[in-house]
Image (cartoon, rainbow, N blue to C red):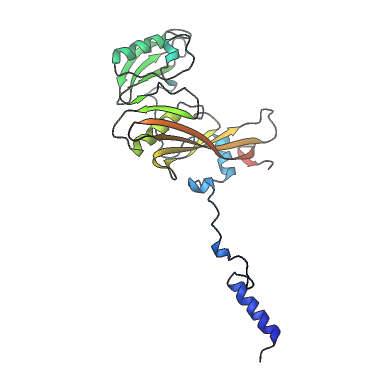
Length: 277
């Protein structure tokens, strides 16, 4: 006969093997799984330090396949912008980008905008796409800057309800039909080019239909460096989700901005290192 102590030890071992307490308690197999991290939700494989290093090096601001808007052949210094109400009218209280389906109206706005500032920028060409009218100009002075003025076609996008540079809020009315997830993604990436994120210290980590909200919401996950103004100590990196959602029936666009996570880093030589907590 087995010794009673040996029986008790065998029972205890069996209990441990099944990950359950024999006198009651919680079965760990019934516990809910941990919520996925934002990085996992959006498929971000880079570590915090790898993200910070990319920001410091400014090696690439967008992922592969991101919308491209290259300068014309032979032009190295190019400024591109959409004509706003404040470019053609004085005393406006809120900036928004203009739209029209009338070429002559767009040209008039282009001429008005070209006459503001340091001097008149000469018209050297124009073109029309399915999305906008473009007027190409050369700035006065030396060296000259190649300027691409654009005016949205209202039949594509009406941004009159959209205050420039303000998140969250309305983002316009997408009038092109049919509305698709691909069209929404292209528009989101195009609009990014005219934000402050298209500068040093910022990078798009992911551009995709939102994995939670679905195809009528597109998310850009952007990492942004907030440098320590004193020039010493830790910098902060904010990783944010910039989202555009569209109503498939009306075309109404809305944009939201939320912080996914933040961390500290510092530049060491040409790379990045952890800093603080």
